[in-house]
Image (cartoon, rainbow, N blue to C red; front, top):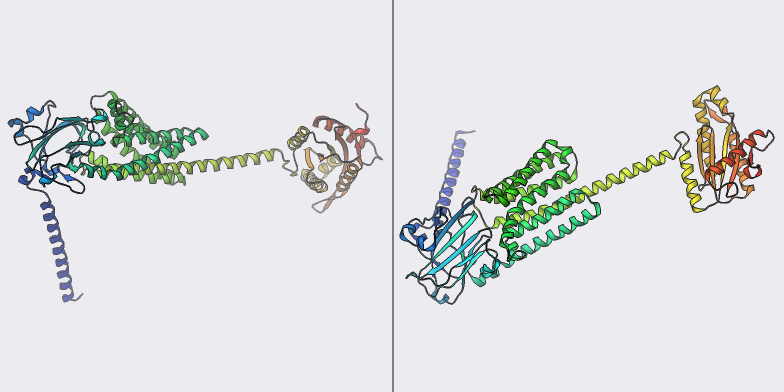
Length: 599
């Protein structure tokens, strides 16, 4: 490269680096400008009609009540007022079992809004108890009685019929008013409170209600699907799929606050138990379903043992959640187990998928989808990332979609099972056919003869039995060997099949003995003509290694029902007639059982 060109390239690189640095500094400055100053944060929040509600996060002063016993009168004393702090990052905070006091001031941006009703919304359904105090006028008197609500209280304590914690209030004028909120929760964070015009908030919830309705409808449909599979096939895997759907429905309804609103409106303790247990039970059923769908015991035994260990841990967590003093430990253990179990099952799905087990590929997609979205909730609860209210909707949608993918995977597995059963049935039929077919000649065996004869006997159909025995066959074996004898048997079997109708049956009973089942009630002359043709076919030489091998044949004929009403009786009658024809040197080579005297 020429020196001038090299210098130009260095110049452009410096310009680009400088531009990037400038943009970074500008972005940092903008971001810093978003954060209000402490004086702005302590100033009363001017409320008015605003899309999405007026956020109060930066105006909240927080007091961590480690004693859990402070009263409103105590926190209003000067010594406690000085302990209220402005948190550095109001939307970030680890879950912890604690009691928080919030303090903030509100005023009307427009005095004309005095008749309006306002709603203070706390986007949480899992807070054990929330107490709203105020608004307090500058002279210290409260405009309304305290409001107490939360998971530990019946649904009727909820204001605005909201699943989330909410408080209705009025401000009579544009003076600053002080509000106190006490929050007690096992899953407490610094809450993202907002002030809405009540009508605006109720209108804004329509999309969420529609989303929840669609989610519940899909889950109920999957429940019915799982129940049908269970009733039809009765396999344990469908029990776990059904329970996974049921527990997922319970977990989502708990996270959305619908358990307390509908089935347990007057029984908050039951709603709290469901809120704690349903995620653990869902994870247990999900793991059991995954184990069986992926067949981990066969494809990845070491992963299967790890899943069993996770199941044991979740079982202990579920019991501890009911009776232990620290339910947050249960919740954190369930969260960690869900993430770890999803990763383990994802690995199992990859192992099974590499063996071309296609349901594992679908399962892999479902688990990966949920793992990404559940990770957002779990990491936020651990304080690793900022928590956003939209995370729950994302996780809810992913959980429902995962179960849909699992349903498709179960259907794919079912299709594989049905194909396997069809292949097994076809193989069994082949084995049965092999048992009913003589392997040397290709005609029916004695078993095949018995099956056909039994069928005709059950149907009451007339038929004739022709018993055929080769004459001179032993001499062929002795002189030319068994290979030559086999060739004679195979050739004569082929000639016999060509001499009868498709509705008739040719069978080899063993050695050099054959039998024919002739369908219908043929006339004696027709049976005699058939016997003559068979004798003629037997008289033709069989070519073997350039030699013409010859054998003779003797035939005995018995008819049903004249000569017997069972296969054994007919064979005995035909056998007597056949030996009679052997003994008659000048006989035509066949005899009818009806012409023989009874033994």
